[in-house]
Image (cartoon, rainbow, N blue to C red; front, side, top):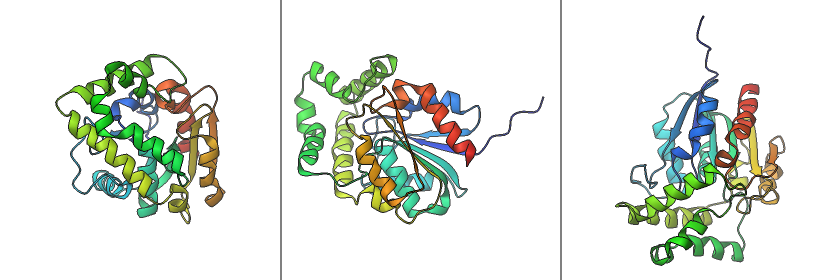
Length: 253
């Protein structure tokens, strides 16, 4: 029997403080239909050190340099969603279709939100926090307390206490500053035309649906999907449901 033909290369980008491992379960399901590449962004525990900074544009240019010249299907979560959107703005011809999963920075952040993000990401705070506080902070944003959350918290603690901890914490701090200082993602996507899907958890406190609707104001043709019972980490809280959502979207494109 002939092997099933891939519907194209699907590049997956992880979120703030995470790694390609966050996509592992969803990627297994998506590999049935796509040639999947889950990348580790510069500054992450498993990624290279960045050459040109942690701003979304710098990270987007790094990814563009990694994926080759052929247009790809692209999905990014959290910070990875912000970077994926920046890629679509910088090089729209390289992105066949775009899925943003709980992307950061969709709209402008107000003062209170800026202070919250900065407080959560400062190296000086993280370095002095007791382990219990680090566990609670790493698990913030999850609505489902399952193996996905446990694995993410364990990986986060390992990266923040291991030999590369200072580099990882610096990456988190500067990546947050990069998102806060960048133009909103909704503005960057204005004028793009590739098929666009925006996904968020109905219980996501970090990228709630009302914030993501700013993208639909500039890309009225985009689809918004809210996953019931899910928080910020759909790829870890319910990998099969997210994989099915992405598969349906990319297959239609």
